Length: 364
Image (cartoon, rainbow, N blue to C red; front, top):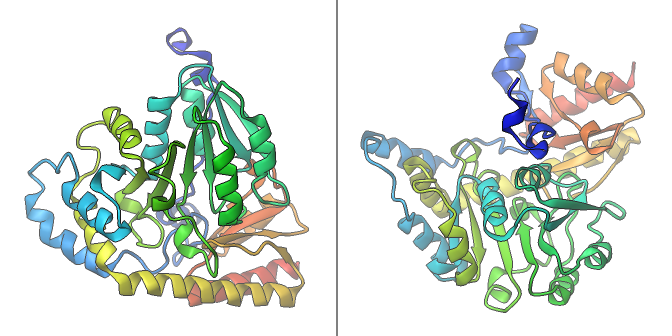
C-alpha cells in the first residue's frame, strides 16, 4: 500500500537473516539445554572484568554516555600505539560499515566486495543506492587480482573481510600490502578484521603501517568475539585522522551506550580472559578437525572461531536434525553453498556434543 514512499532499492532489499536465539528454539521445540554454535559468539561468556565494571556503573544510567567516548578511545590508543584521532567508536563494527558508506559513497557509485562475504556489506550499499560488484572467491580466498582489475575511476569503496566470513581464510599480509599499494587514491578500503584475534601463526598488518600514508584505509574491529561483548554492540574503526574526522561527522551523537564503553575498557584490560578465549578456540578447532578427519568429512581449515563443513546430505535436513537435538548451526545455503554448514567452536563439552550428534546424522 505504501510502496510509493520508498525507492526500488529499499523495496527489493531483503532483511539480514539473524540466527535464532536459544530461548526461541527451546520454546518452539519444547526442549531445554539448547546450545548455539551458529553466530561466532564467545562460548565463555563476557569478560569477567567487564561484568564487574558494568555492574558497578549501573546506578549511573540516568546520565547520558560520553558522546566522544574519550576514555575508551584513550585506552584503545594506548593499546594500539596510536593517537586518539585515529580511532572512531561504533555501535558494533557494523556501524563503521554504515558510516563508511554515508561518508564516502554517493548514489550509483561503485562498491566492490567478494562473494561470498559478510552479507551486511551489500545491504548497506543497496540502502545507499550504490552500485555493487561482487568478485567470487578463488579457492575460498579473496581474489585480490580480480578485485584489482574491477577497480575503476568510479569505485569509491572496497569492503574486504580478513579473515573472510564465511570461509575463515586469511589473506597473507604481504599480498594484502601489495594490493593496497596498487589501489587508486580515490578508493577507500574498509578492511574488516572482526576475527583477527583468532589468527594463529600468521603475519598480520598493523594499522600503524598504513594509516599515515596517502592510501585511504579504514580498519574495522570489534569487542563482540574475543572479548565476549556481542550483546553490547561495541566496535571501532582505525584510520588516518582526516578519514576518521569525516566518519565522525556522519556519526549520530551518543551512539555508544555507557555500559558498552565501560565494559569495553575493562575487557581490553582483561588479558587473561582474552588469552583463554583464544586458547579454548584453538584447542577446540584442533579437536573438531581431528574428529572430522576420523569421520572422513570435508571441511575447510580456518583462521577464525568458525569454519565450513561439507556434508553429502540436503542442508535443510542437516540443520533441522541438529536443531531437534538442541544444537543451532548455520546453513550456508544463503551463500550459495548448498551442502555446507558453518560451525562456531564452542566449549569442550559443546564441541563433543556436536561430534556425537554429527555421528548420528552420518548413521542415518
